[in-house]
Length: 457
Image (cartoon, rainbow, N blue to C red; front, top):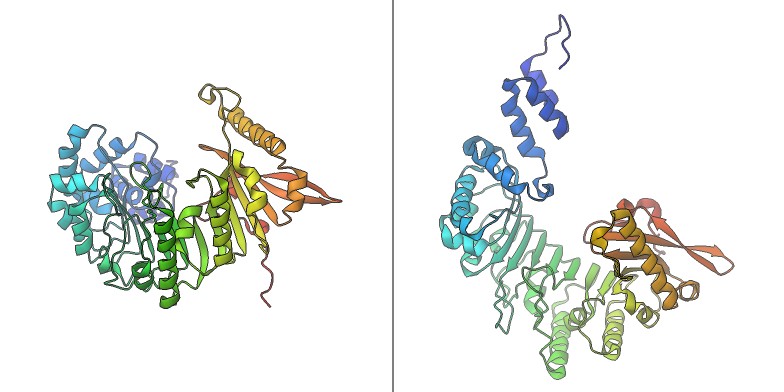
């Protein structure tokens, strides 16, 4: 720190200045004086996003907290998902986790994995979780019967919850999630779960976003009754611990159609979910859901659909389009499925966007041996090759007059392109910066790229 003669700064003022500094500058302040060290630790623990910890640094962070649990755990605002590197260290980790949670009275966000194993090793963890008064967001994975009982006892005013229940390999139905988190019914606005609702004991009147991690949609009536104000709905079978589970693939065609018809009857009787801002899922799950509701945005995933031939796929996809009458459609598909788009694009859609998954090593090149820039170029080159081979070029872009965006992706490498119409029948692709093109679950486009929807009148 630069010394200025005759200038003395009060310790309290330095502490106030630290509150406005980025993490790197806070660390610099802490090196100047031991007296600033506790204040700096407190600010770092309160402001740093520990969900973005570099890979392999979770162990160091945990040891840092354990070095002074009463003070440092009390400063925590968020606790990321941590797990010991070796399974035989789980009992020690469960004990230390209980110790930390007992002092984390200011915790607002909590993420735990292997929840069932932790509660088995330390049953008192359930009481410690329920005793956290300020929790607003939780993410619990590998939840079994013991930890599910903890969720039933919780009375915390949560706003967001991400729950992943364990699915027994030989189970015919998805695990029961009927009465979990009922203590948060008045405050919960976002819920992601992979369980099945068998009844509707409580109404979640403030919940507007629901993400389902299961296609066990036999009777959606409990969902309609429990979550009447849902505006954003998604089905993602792959967002769960372990391999993806589907409960409809073994149904006979008659059973599958009966499930859809029952859901349609329930939807018509309940008079809820009539207009959805966003609806997303794979073709088969959306078809089984059977909603006859206006969806302003529809994201339909073809890469995760389970079909041996395209006839059934086309029929079910067209039924989903007819039932939802979307204004905007986004497709997710593999490069070898691009030719299906000509049949899938529904009439009357104002805005169309597609994600195309391509293989980065399609030319036999081991991408692990190449740099990131080369691999990105390889992805784009292969994608453009697919466009040429599958006639997904100027002719197709002219036919699909509402196509706005094309995205190519392979693992962690993505490239986004905006469709540009240059007049006289010419159509091209303009690359978009990655930070503008990709966002969260629902893509957030830059303001200058947003398509203005036509006036309903």
